[in-house]
Image: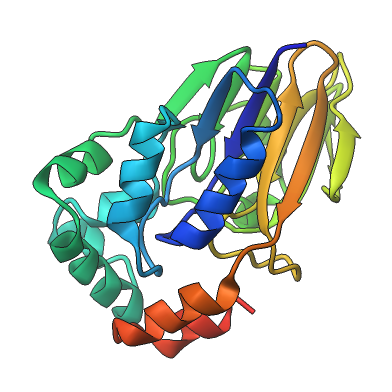
Length: 241
């Protein structure tokens, strides 16, 4: 059995990431991938970056990492989010900063593509903007399976003979059918917005093509209290619940 883990949008939520990685350790995976936005919104960006690096998680760039690069990219954020990114820059080391802003915009491994926003390599484009016409999205990558984040939501699209269909992505097992192309929105570790406040990540069995979505509880209050203690916008704490 050969399995990989896929996660996204940690957003400086160390409590959530720690619990996800503890659960991941029990899954017997050979590699783990994070689809960007390791920082932003959350109160412990340095701890999250250090842990992801220590654990050898393969990470792509998200729009929040891109926002750290310069004022041009930072202007794309609303004021509260931009304020957190400015603080984030102060909270992380030079080494962590250079690592974050040098992440690739996409990765291809195990026959899958990994990207934050939209294939082939957009870190800023939202999937929901294209749901009425998914054919161009599928034409943007050659792999059978593409994993994306960015929206903090859970869903999957399949393209059978060029006709895209949308399906929910529930907790537990989902077969990614062979001879069908897939695009999977993997949800969020640190800021879920799918109506369930548990941290989300997936485990893909590369032999059976079964994707198991793992929903992991964590200490939400601890993270929310830290957000408020840092003086970040209250909304970033409130929406964890």
